[in-house]
Amino acid sequence: MSEAADWWGTAVSRIEPDVIELRGRPVQELIGQVGFAQMIWLMLRGDLPDPRRAALLEAALVSSVDHGPHAPSIAVARMAITCGVGLNNAVATGVNLLGDVHGGAGEQCVALLEEARACGDTAATVARRRARDKYLPGFGHRFHTRDPRRDPLLGLVERAVADGVVAGEHLRVAKEVEELISPVPMNIDGATAVVYAELGFPAPLARGLFVLGRSVGILAHAWEEAGQGRRNKGPLPPSIRPTYLG
Ligand SMILES: CC(C)(COP(=O)(O)OP(=O)(O)OC[C@H]1O[C@@H](n2cnc3c(N)ncnc32)[C@H](O)[C@@H]1OP(=O)(O)O)[C@@H](O)C(=O)NCCC(=O)NCCSC(=O)C[C@@](O)(CC(=O)O)C(=O)O
Image (tube, rainbow, N blue to C red):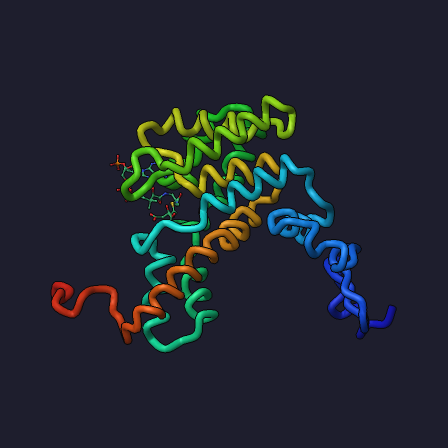
């Protein structure tokens, strides 16, 4: 193959006149046959998951869709749309707020679970990590003392472990961490990280997958806000002035 043809060489898709193949499968065979969670798996990993694994992935995506205008990623998207930008800009604004502290901590949480698993001593791993940073990724919440998304997600993983679908090692370690830092609760980044790690997704994809799920809620909120017709809506009602500290 020539250097020019190799420039964007990809194993993800093959597009030729009248041909669209995604991960080696003609798109005609995918449309109407494959669910969106399966499609995400196929595109990221190159194969199709069995229905149990696809259902776990879908559950994690569903659980991270929305957390209302309290959540920074939702609030900024709503604010953005009132400034006259397009829906795509509003969605990008919300997605751009997902990071180490909000919605993106799944990446570091998977790494933490891997580290504890490899070390074989979760308490030692937690102590080592907390000596560097008092906040462990995937744990803690601004107002939930028990995140309502945790139990259903971990319950699904427990069932998958019982049925031999996943190994359960990341689940075990995550529960040990939670116990060690109790009462700090596991949050949604942590619970989805358990699912993604059990399914074998590399750590950075835990963040990428959270972005996909949350994009749905961001879009819904931006669309609703657009319909309310407010213009140039700031973070506070105009009657409330930030305290001047000068
Ligand atoms: C999330 C938050 C900033 C909350 O802080 P908070 O303000 O509540 O905690 P603080 O007041 O700082 O701490 C009080 C006491 O608990 C201790 N403590 C707290 N967290 C601890 C922890 N992780 N490991 C050990 N110890 C901890 C701390 O050391 C202190 O102890 P002490 O000093 O002795 O008093 C914090 O946990 C944190 O950075 N987590 C790690 C990053 C992470 O996982 N991010 C994902 C969060 S989920 C999300 O983004 C999605 C969301 O749910 C968002 C939404 O809507 O909110 C949605 O769906 O959109």
